[in-house]
Length: 361
Image (cartoon, rainbow, N blue to C red):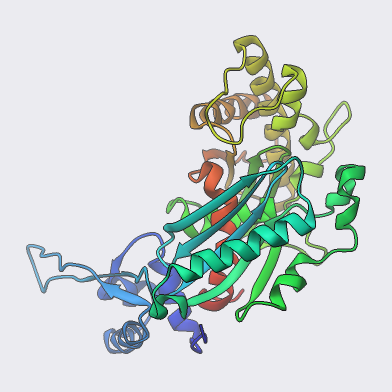
């Protein structure tokens, strides 16, 4: 897809309706624009196929209000996620719905295998699309852990490979790569809850724990892309957050691997209770420590775990946060994320979406 040149106000409008359709009058007020200016902007976005009008809502007073929302077929995005045992490829539409999903279990992420998986997936996905939609693929985002070679000798092959550059050389649209936890944060920011504050720390409990940082409604990566890398945060008593609030830690105690979906999570209650308690304490420390630096409103917790377990981790974090000494600092709210296992693949697709269609910041 040849991306249209969008103005700041056009990008801003598209961002404001991403999670909730809004009528023109409300958008004009929120954006500080005249009704005519908003009408001109929305008309161009409709002509570009990026915006759609919903059914008019009639109130007791005044003209019917017609909500505007992203047009699902306006642009399509590919997301590629590299996990410890699972690689995924998905086609996401402009409204954030997963149109196609492919996945493959692997002993560990191996570059050549992932490149082959991606190539085959691209071919099969694009072959199944009508010509008009095929031309609307606007980019590929890759969510992958950074410094994979630090995970062990079997990952040494990653040190000299750049799969982003390799795939970009073959594809006719932008290819972007970001840390998997930061990508999950981007997924929540772009496709997740509509009631998030402007400043929050995002913590993602997966095989290893990680995180992301949002300030002023923007994902912040830092000059060395370490912002929000909470998995590496040292904890009192030794170790890092990823040594405690990670599925790998639970598996080590359990003595076996857990499946990459919600089935088979038949963990003995004593082991699960202890892991959730320890994870909650570690997450609370990380969230409060970040708040003392960045003055955050919330800590959002999500993860590649069953929803019921995620809720228990959030509750344990809330309890642990209440037990921390808080003199001089307003503690952040502890909020449950909304995307679960889909966060990283949606976040991967959100990378080209944000680059091409949302406000720069």
